[in-house]
Image (cartoon, rainbow, N blue to C red; front, side):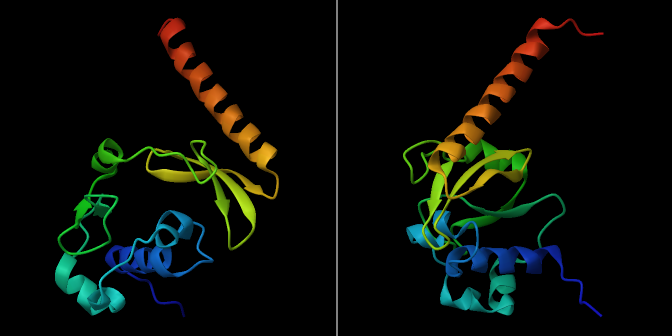
Length: 153
């Protein structure tokens, strides 16, 4: 029988994966660029002692994205708060949302929508990654314009 883990425990596990596991899809944006966590957070008990229980509707948030995970730099925050302070930087390709995963030797085209990561393309072709991102941006712009132009009922 599989043990059901708490949201707090899942946040801790995900944070450690992002920082330490090159096979994790998000590693390039965390451990791959030097984001670490304190030795105390190697154990769930150490993490829980510093951060406490994750409130409903919140996730682990670094206040300053350039600094590592730590008691001083982390808080439980809503997705709305995280989106407001999210840094928008180009991916490793120099283009927004397009990254090279060195470990898996693949291009990733991705975006974030309503607190969820969306992978638009994952494969060996840089051109296809760019096309997937461009197509997504085009659809998003088209849908935004439609909301403005179409009369509401």
